[in-house]
Amino acid sequence: MINIVILFLVAMLVIGVVSKLRTVSARRIGRRRGGGALPGKPRKCRQCGRFLIGSDRCDCDKR
Ligand SMILES: [Zn+2]
Image (cartoon, rainbow, N blue to C red; front, side):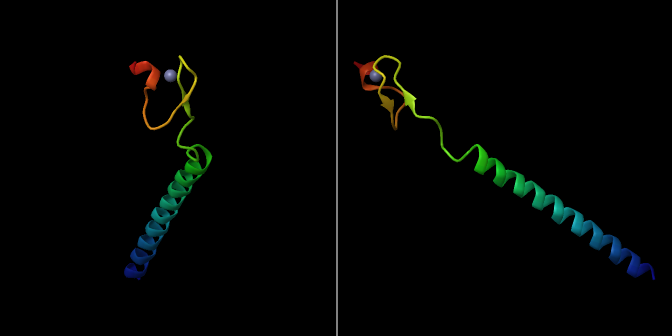
C-alpha cells in the first residue's frame, strides 16, 4: 500500500511540473506573438529623415 501512495504522489508531482512548464512556455509564446512580432520600429535619421537600415548612423552623420 505504501508503494502505491508514493507512486501516486510522484505522479501528482510530475503532472504539476509538466503543467507549470506548459503554462510558462505558453506565456512565452504569447509574448512573442504579442510584442515580438516585429523586430523593432524602423529608425529615422534626425537630420535628414531617412530610414536607418543595417546601421545606427546615417550617411549624413559621417560626412
Ligand atoms: Zn541622415
